[in-house]
Image 1 (cartoon, helix red, strand yellow):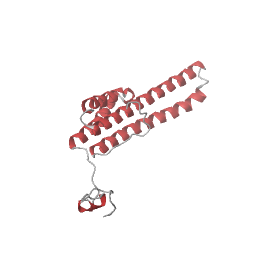
Image 2 (cartoon, rainbow, N blue to C red; image 1 turned 60 degrees about the vertical axis):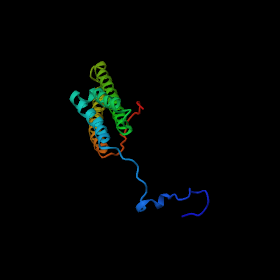
Image 3 (cartoon, rainbow, N blue to C red; image 1 turned 120 degrees about the vertical axis):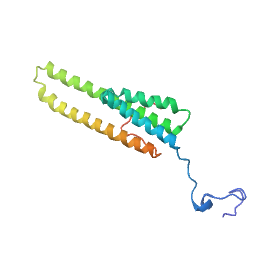
Image 4 (spheres, one colour; image 1 turned 180 degrees about the horizontal axis):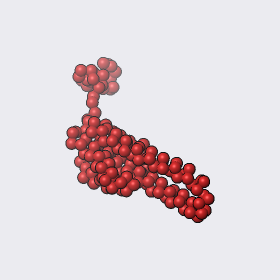
Length: 165
């Protein structure tokens, strides 16, 4: 122990001198908090799947209900619900953008009396691949987030617009 005066109050232990030589543990979320956090991700996933992933606004609604219920009770559950809201809202916006691009591609094909098909067909295939990649990412990330929340870990979705703080 350091004998310099004023560094620590008399009789206090430094972090290195805690019982059993371990560093102090941070508080982990309770089982109930972990369940609510996992439910935020899982309910958003299930409700969005039931209404089709393009109508992912239902996923936002499910996570928002859990956020409203737990925002004052559990910082852990509300953080996960906020993350689920932002992710599902982002996926909904990406789906809307993909639909708009699809409409433009169809319009270009029709306006050029089919000649534009030489350009729009490959672009349409790329758009379908992008939509498929977004759908797979949405499904996999939602499952990973549910598992992380169940285990009491924090999780940040990739490619998420943080619109709701």
